[in-house]
Image (cartoon, rainbow, N blue to C red; front, side, top):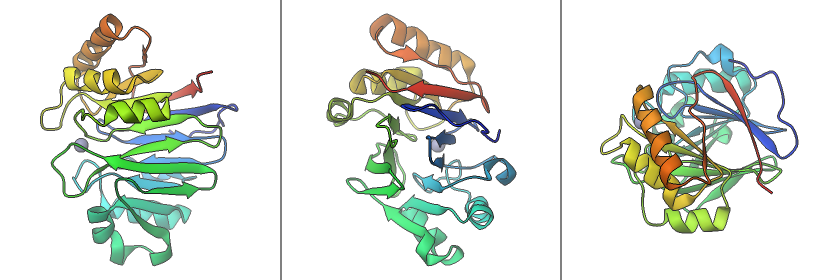
Length: 229
Ligand SMILES: [Zn+2]
């Protein structure tokens, strides 16, 4: 899975690497890894930052985070609960807490946390803005919530990852609702083991939100998304 290529200007590349919310984002200058579990540390050699959205087993594997951090000397940016459990295992200057409303920078790439509608301790969703202004909404395991409308209007999202399964209440319909509220240029159904559920998401999207494109990702494949004009 190592992503050898670099995205063009005004574009990003992403890889979905497990059946959950595991996403690698590569911008022209930085590589971010979100919620790494079920992935070989060897395939994540050039990581600049690991982002962790909440403490559930399908999002936080402490030993793996420590191993990737050791291999790459990357930063780790985590929700408060995950940060607390990682605290004694990482160099203190490499670990940062994030919570809804806060933002941080990896070089010129901006990471902003928003709330998450999911039964975890202090979960976050993440808005990533590349150095060229490509906007990505990683909704982690979240169900749709009303503030997503304002997020969509403010950010003008290029790409939104929408949970369609494996979390309490999550279905292709709730995943679609995230797309309907945030109106991204491209919506990606993830957090599922079911291609049927991904196809169902794509059908609803096509019927009800025809201006948003759907990408049904294959795991470990590289996709490029270009900023909308
Ligand atoms: Zn999950």
